[in-house]
Image (cartoon, rainbow, N blue to C red; front, side, top):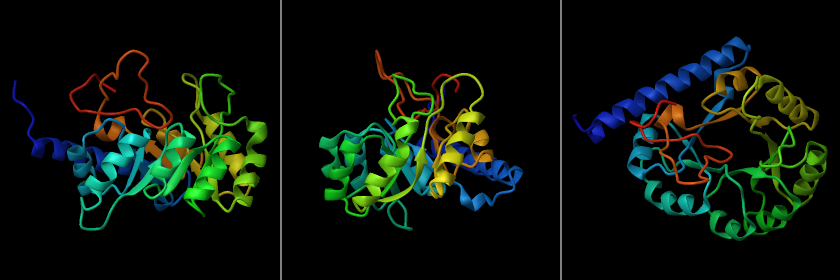
Length: 249
């Protein structure tokens, strides 16, 4: 069996990026939307920096990390990965208050503000930060996200603290049709006057775009299937990643 070379891997990643962008654009057009209104955030949990460099070289400019320690470690290595400047970093995983200070200089967009206790720390260490409120629309006990009834209050609190609340984020329940959940989030964002909806991953991003997503968080379709992380390991809120050569995704 021939071992893939870095050049082979980069070619596969570039092709995956081109395919994903084409699928996003087609979904946007089906919904009568401008494809430029949808941003792809690459979910890079556990992905080596060499492979992320290949994705950046293919044209990706937005990276999303679930784990604070990975983002802090990768950001300096990727700051000069392409001539166009450093990537835009999104934090897309469960956020702990004790990680905010380390993340603050690096993160451009925080997708997972799901409780009032996070607001003061972000306001202190990243004044005026761009944030989204994560909503647990189905009230699933195993998932992060604020209760749907608490969204308006959390948005208002973050706004009073000086944060730039631009939208809402969600992960729909597994199984079944995700469209009603995506439509629900889009409607809630519109009711609050928020322009951004972070929703949709590899298995459902086209439906999300058709229902109003402005950011989709893609792992597997860009970077392959992520090897298991061990007992209890999971991709978390934003990832479904990585490593070509794994099981089919």
